Length: 542
Image 1 (spheres, rainbow, N blue to C red):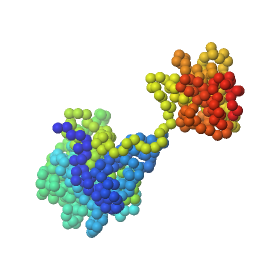
Image 2 (cartoon, rainbow, N blue to C red):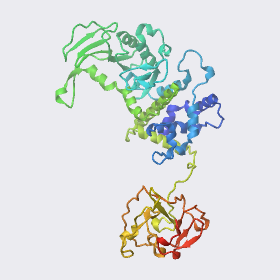
Image 3 (cartoon, helix red, strand yellow):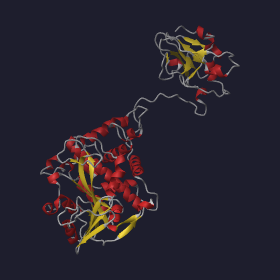
Image 4 (cartoon, rainbow, N blue to C red):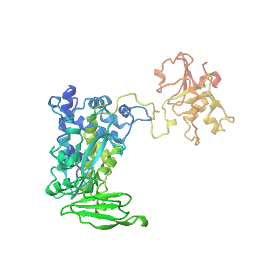
């Protein structure tokens, strides 16, 4: 059975978004019952994910009507005021139940629910890995961490458990300082915080013979023995000075390997560009050739080093996939950043499931997957019609089968002035290309506001009339008009002769009527026709 991307997203979010967040948000902000409905929740988070693909400096600009930065899709899903209202009031817990020292109490059961969905969605393969990631945050926060090796440097540290084959996120443990929720706090004394973190993340995966890959921040001989007692195996780098490690003296020559073992643990000391110590509980020592595109770099390395390098990058792959399209925005409320980061992880996991179950098809990349989710939600919950506002000023083409210049759409002649207020003359486009009508090139200050070309007005046989009625007109190469000169009278909409009003002093308006006759009105509304003047000098005074 082929499921849609929306169903995969709903699988990751079941029991978390639908209804629960809306109720908590309405209670927190004292909003009316109909303000946040189930459809509004879906549209809000879909629009938030889309904002991760379309980057803009501020939220207001997604609803901007400026044609340079306009994104017409966003107003069709939700109005700006409603989106910002929901974002401002978004809440995830009942404040009356926030007791104790849990620093993540602001998230309520949100994180527990979504992590339960992750762990129940897949059964991981043999190899799983644990690594840390940093959610950038520079605000005031007691458990904010500083890591100079990370790009963000400051932020909220999270420990992530991933399946190495699928690269699926199975569990996440956020660092909260002393109040970090560990499965057993007695582990801190025996294993340190790193070892206690590993055993906490592995709850539900112990006694199942998994191979766990970790780095030297977590691993030590004592942790390896405890995991063996739980029928779980471990591989990773380890620090030489860890308690229980064998004594290593002197400097090892490059390319050499030294091994230490007991009945359960194998430690390998390998020297390449720098010394590395590997500890594992399920592999014997062996050397394998590491292939390289450069034959000079082909050399033998311990098999544990090659396996570690090949499967340890699952958490880094999650960050690499999500971060270019993160929906996380700067916020004073740190827990909102955590929630939006979890939204991104849930979407990533949904993409992994979709591609795994559709292995016979082309793998859908993360960006395309997000677009499919948003498009399907928009089709299922169409809420807004076309945005209300002033329609754009575009020429009206009454008969699309004809060119715009031949349509009886009441073409308007406007007069251009330069900076000094004097008429700005330019070549008449019709006289310039039709010598049979006008042997001499003529200049004119008038142009057609609809067609955007300069045309002279010479009574009943003017170029203005010929241009808008000649069906056998030669092809004319039109260059853009000089933008320094401004039209003397700017008219936003074409006006019919019967409803034209007075334009004010020193104003003249020309209209080409549907029967291709030039109609002129002066400032008093007096009507002149094309037969009443023969050239531009006989026009009403300007």
